[in-house]
Every structure is written in structure tokens, then in C-alpha cells.
Length: 152
Image (tube, rainbow, N blue to C red; front, side, top):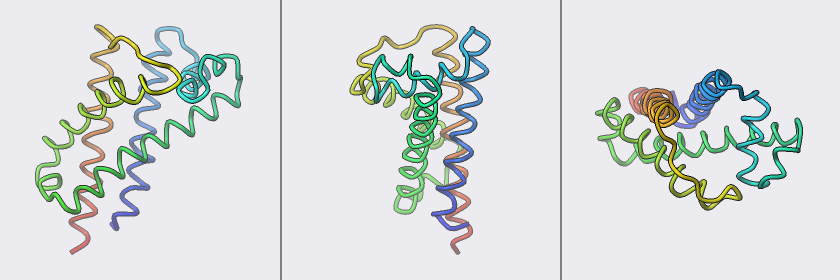
């Protein structure tokens, strides 16, 4: 698999796994999918995203996959120079997922129109860490490894 294909497929898989997790996890707590993606759009639109209906939710979905693209592309491209990332995909992927979680929550969200937030506690924190390790970091590392192995 070429690295460009790895980024495209990785983005689709990682973005979808994370979206399913959000819809299920927060859906069980009463949040409708439209509200979840409006919440993502709030990073760009601010509080008005909550009353933006389906267009705001669609923007949130696009932003969600844009972030997934950035996460996957960064790892795949870095792995082309740092071979450790593909030699140890489980450990490196898990650590990368944790790094992505904290980067999103401590840098990206505070700098967005949402502004600084307290880190989630209990179930949301555990869920966030688990999806970032198993649904984002490890699949990203797998796509990077696969693209590297098939390049030879």
C-alpha cells in the first residue's frame, strides 16, 4: 500500500471508529448525533453551532475527518523517516494515541472557539483515552506499517 493510500484509508477508518465511539458513548448519555457534531463545529463557529441545525452538524463531521486526516498523515509521514514508528506499531501507536488525546484537549480545543475546558473525569476520560489508544493510535500505526512494508 502506498503511503498516500495509507493516509486516505487510515483517515476513513480512524475517523469512523472515533465517530462511532462518540455517537455510542455520548448517545447512551442522551446526546443525539447531530448535537455531537454540532459540538465539534463549535470549535470553529463557537456557541452558535448549537443552533446551526444540520449545516453545523455537517461542518462538524467535515472538521472531524479533517482532524483525523491530520493525525493519520502526521504519523504516516513521520514513520517514513522514523522507522521505530513502524517497527513497534503497538507501543508507538498507543503512545501516539495518548499524545493525540492530550494535544487535542490541552492545545487544540483551548485555542478553538470552544476555549479552555477542564479535562473530563471518570467515564469520559477513560473512554477518551481508550478510543485514542485503540481506535486512533494503533490503527494509524498499522496503516503506517502496512504502507512501509509494501513499499519494498
